[in-house]
Amino acid sequence: MSFENLSIEREGAVAIVTVNRPAVLNALNTRTLEELGRAILELKHDEAIRAVVLTGAGEKSFVAGADINELAVQSPTGGREHAIRGQQVLDLIEHMGKPVIAAINGYALGGGCELAMACTIRMAADTARLGQPEINLGIIPGYAGTQRLARLIGKGRALELLLSGDQISAQEAHRLGLVNRVLPAAELMAEARKLAATLAAKAPIAIRYILDAVHQGLEMPSAQAHTFEATLFGLVASTEDMREGTAAFLEKRKPAFKGR
Ligand code: COA
Image (cartoon, rainbow, N blue to C red):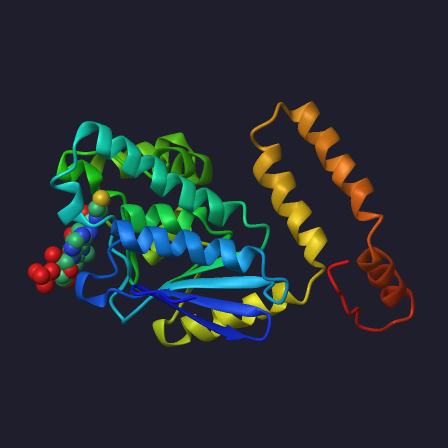
């Protein structure tokens, strides 16, 4: 895979994907979004990779939003297509079937906050700043931020952030439930890698089904979601990993999951 605006490192079963346009605080232009979509698809189908860490290059920014140079000249039909393309890439991340940890190392604004919300778990440096400042540009979020934010932190809190456009600190984002953990900036990447390695050692099929049960189940009426969960629970019983996990417990040893 060759990229202009992304870098990918592999450490065992963990891939570290870094958005790399530090001169513009890692803003997402069309090319970067396209590269991100391509990278995620490739990692989704790579059986050697079981977890991903997503971060931004440099010390200042995770992703400071969509590229405002492109937004400034968009047409109505082009804007709609741009939003749909962005949503598709973020949906790919949410539905890749492997945990994606956002290591929010600085600004996560607009499309950057939306990108972090499409990830499975958000870890933020204590120096990070988050928000949906689109309103200050006379626009609205277009990568499904209105939807993910309201689902993640509740409608009332989401509306305040979306309508004010205010940036909030990592600590405030943690209080609101927008990020899972806040860490000293110097420890962020090591902790993100550690969590990714821990998740990468779990049973991959069970991981995938938990992600499906939560993401898809939340969109269903609850009785149907319960049945969906039960079906996945039954399906996971067909895996070698279930036999390995239960046998390892009974034999008092660590399981070795193979994703089969
Ligand atoms: N799109 C394009 N360029 C961006 C950008 C974006 N979303 N965010 C930052 N940049 C560029 C700046 O234009 C600047 O470029 P320059 O050096 O050629 O002037 C460079 O990145 C550094 O940003 P700067 O604004 O000088 O840094 P700062 O520390 O003063 O402020 C921010 C940092 C994040 C508060 C500020 O850059 C900002 O508000 N960015 C836009 C955030 C936003 O509205 N995102 C949502 C878009 S939908």
